[in-house]
Amino acid sequence: MVDCNLGRRSFTKAAASVGAAATVGLAGCLGDDDGEGIELLTPEGNLNIMHFLAGTDQGFWADEGLNFNPEVAAYGRFVNALPDDGNDVGLLEYNNLSQYTQEGEELVQFGPCITQINSIFVPVDSDIETVEDLQDIRFGHPGWSTGTGTYTQAMIWEQHDFDIREENETTESDPATLYDLMVEQDEVDAMLQFTGQTVRGLANDDEVRPVYNAWEEWEEETGFPPLITPWCAQRSWLEDNPETALSLLAGWSNAQEHIEQNAESVVNEYGQQAGVSEGEESAVIELAESGGLHLPVDDYTDELIDSQWRLVEAMEDLGSIEAVPPREDHIVSIDELRAMAEE
Image (cartoon, rainbow, N blue to C red):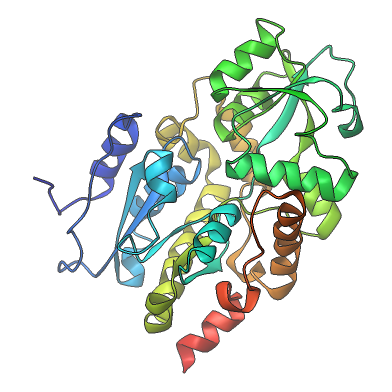
């Protein structure tokens, strides 16, 4: 039986112990006396676990009147959390938003999350110097259907006018194996990595170096970095609960600010649960202190959404998604959400 009186300590244990075949369930824990109950899934090994751990520990969502129950889950369960009969609120990548809206799901993104820091690395002594050099090589990746795969393929197509998937001999493998295939076995010339191995690469600059940083490249191109999993909700829930959505974003905003101002202590306390290995803490601390991990909630404007929709449109050009979701039906800016709350 699941204990519904779950606080920060229980979530810490869940984050530390979750594995490929095990997650901790919080189903049925809504509506207790500690505030309005909100469930949300976050993928294992994601840096936003630090935000949820630190934020719940500091009481940022409780201060907003919410009993916020984030749950660490395996990736497959995470991406399927929001369709019918799933959670009301969650985090959702653009490629999955497109898929689900094509299937008739009425989902709406309503706020920013962590930025995509995922990078392409080469060995430190490689002859590959620029993005244009990432053609006619042996390229390792963690899966083209993942958010990281579709985002990066689309950004390079939009910025540099070639399809990195079609131009190369490719090897698909899990992130840790990819790292070893390049560094230890010389089986690939470059690799695209998820967050955890990106942090590993940034922390081990004697082994590898980045040739493509998604957040820097897309920000230079559009004025904003890509958001990997924006906040998302069922349309019916969002229309009925815009004030609660704003409270969720307020707690998230306070967690962001707390991490930026206390990066070292937060990473040291919660980094392991978020997939940060020993010796890699400094890379995450630097990202947090620089503001590179996330955007302010107030930046979730029409201009930022424009920059993200260019990315979604590039995905459609490549055939990574079937169609671009109608923007007016599936995304609201922070100003629109505040207007909904005032009605």
